Image 1: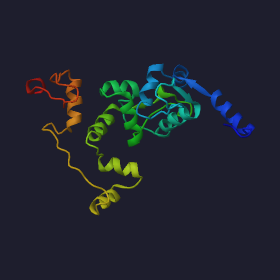
Image 2: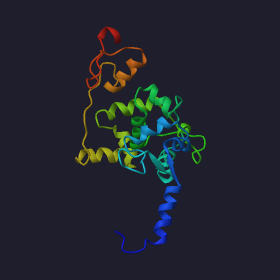
Image 3: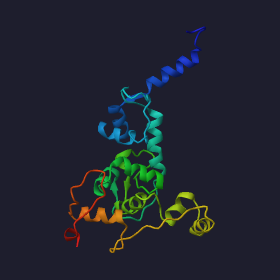
Image 4: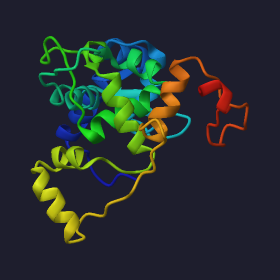
Length: 214
């Protein structure tokens, strides 16, 4: 029960918020993607919905959309990679859901390329599938290479090794296959070559027949 008048400033703020809310279709247009693509970063929490209620229609505030695209713009730098693809195509190439690719890019601060970062929308950002494969392979084990850790923390490699020597950072050994590639990378490579894994249940590890990969 109200015991007094709501200040005009609060009412104006609420009205202003509702004026800038966008539904999923308009939010997709704002970011330069189709409506279905909006759900991908929304589900893991990379893009925040204005109303958190489960059954509420998805609405997005412009500041949250700007914040999401701003994180991608912050990752733009000169890249020496030649195999750059837009994020959606790269996720298809490495056979990883787009939302996980975006999360991997943001968490590991992977370099992106955009012709004009200031006005770039989601389809304008490019990433290297080769870099994604390497990072995703170690991500599967919850680890990153020392060089990647140094970049994330903004320190040099010597500092990372010192932190490891003093147990401030914990190291983890990753078993490599005979090919010299990490297990996650090996699986992606075999899939790219057309090899089909055994038809196991969805939660099972990906297993290939030896005759299919040798």
